[in-house]
Image 1: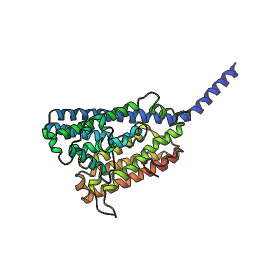
Image 2 (image 1 turned 90 degrees about the horizontal axis):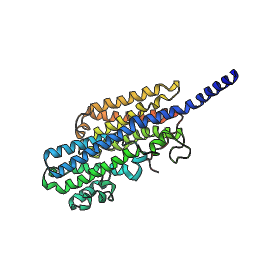
Image 3 (image 1 turned 135 degrees about the vertical axis):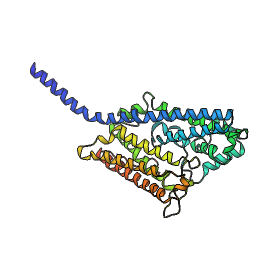
Image 4 (image 1 turned 120 degrees about the horizontal axis):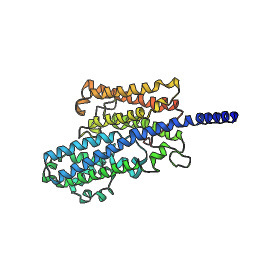
Length: 357
């Protein structure tokens, strides 16, 4: 009898040892969803509903105060979106939501011209939510609403003269709120991406193993850092090819470029820190977490130096240097996360979906 009990205890101990290793990745994946992704999706949903309400109020009773409230709500939405823009998976990639929410970069100005054409022609179809959703992705998201609120002629929004412009902006805000709700709902959908990411199964089409799910998680930050540098920093900074071009920066009209960049960096830092992914390495690699945190803090310090409006910041020696240093930090972080951390975890992050052919 005693031998049977000992055998049972040994089997229990062995079972515990064999299941302990796979549990660590799942704890990380669950923490990423519960502590970071879902809360930030909910925040974007809440701020988007606030913007929708503000635009409705502005159009109902045009005023300078109403316009100020709407622009402030827009700033909150941009910041909230900055924290999820890099989460290029699941609901954000479905129904072309990423491009519909933020068509960027718009290097040829195609989106801008389409928005201007709607305003010039007073295209009534753009003021109806369902009709707007069938139009170009460039005219139905944050970039389009930025021009409505901050572009040429935006001052008319405080008066009856801006009725059409306001109606178009109201439709865009409703569209953004609709997509924000879809994003948050998607991350709570039973049997949806949250379940698949936290508990991969062999018969799932997206995440069949813990390794695949962990690769996707680390890849979000690695590719997010690459996109931050390539899409939101380098295009407007001075280089050997020419001087700084602040009007190539995202949200430059609203003066929200650096707020968006900061939110993007904070969102990626949160995903690493609050998921605990950098702690799931062998003892020899335990310093990686500190290195990542150190570089994210360096990014924050660089951002703190950039206090002038962007057009002035790129012309100021100290602030331009801080922006260039920020690029260096993002590249360093991409190397640490995409190569060193990935290797330490036994992962292969691969190429970004934004890399093209």
